[in-house]
Amino acid sequence: MQLFSHDLGVDLGTANILIYVDGKGVVVREPSVVAVDKNTGKVIQIGTAARNMLGRTPGNVVAMHPLKDGVISDHELTVQMLRELFKEAAKTSLFTPKPRVVISVPSGVTEVEERTVINAAIEAGARRVYLIEQPLAAGLGAGLDLRSPKGHMVVNIGCGTTDIAVLTLNGVAHSYSTKVAGNAFDEAIARFVRKKYNVFIGQTTAENAKIQIGSACARGETISYTVKGRDLETGAPREVTLLSSDVYEALRRPVRQIADDVLSVLDSTSPELVSDIGETGITLTGGSSQLWGMDKLLTEHTGIMCTVADDAESCVAYGCGKSLAWMKHMQEGPINIARKRIMRG
Image 1 (cartoon, rainbow, N blue to C red):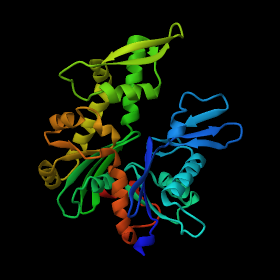
Image 2: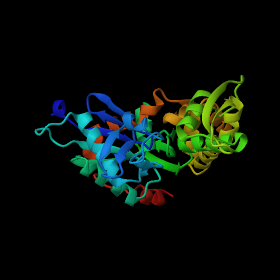
Image 3: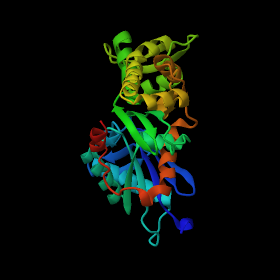
Image 4: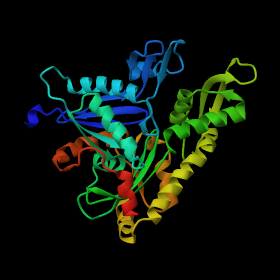
């Protein structure tokens, strides 16, 4: 039966969607962007092709992210996007059974948001839907041994949310979710450029600057990156050469916020599990965890060794894939993460 499995593990990210197919690995890796004709409501492009249209579309076409801060903000567009990506992942035909799907959700998700994710996946063609918390999936995907009572900490820094969790016995002992993540980094850079140079740059430009010269710690050397934007006084195009020290200054507040949140979660965790984490260290996952110096900053801030997982951007998808083997033990439908968190507290 395993040979004909079409079960899918889905990392439903604000910036990217990754789909793991049982027995094949990650087969879909697309930006979670949809281009739609405003006049007809018809979807024109999804994924990379739609992302290339961001900020460059004609008046009747809009390219947008149907997910915001890790949850669905436009239900219909999310359904259409997932429908196409499910087809691409499963290579379905009329005779192929609908897939069972495990989808990751942020730790801070509400029950209403859970149901929205489930309904979207069902409408997109899933037969059954199971949810898993992002940091738990990230820990599994990073290869942590979560079966024992020993505690592990995962900090999953994505585009829309950062999820911080203490994991043990294949579950979440304590977690916290914040909207300070990759998008907040980009916005901070754009604000800095606007304030210091009086130039407006788009989110994609700010993101590129973050990737090229961004850092969570002061670098030993100064490097530069040229950005193009619009002069706020004249409206004309203008180039600005940013220094790595500029971007570090812009990012100091949001990265420090994440570090403070990690300390807060440690402070709320039992001494026994904190002792374990002191031995096992803190594992960073998610695309934005790859910001230069993020591991060093958290190590200095917490006094606990922090390491960035291999293929950090794909950990949640691989974890969703690994959890496919547990599906018969998982609860279908909403998992009431918010309610469980209150009970744990």
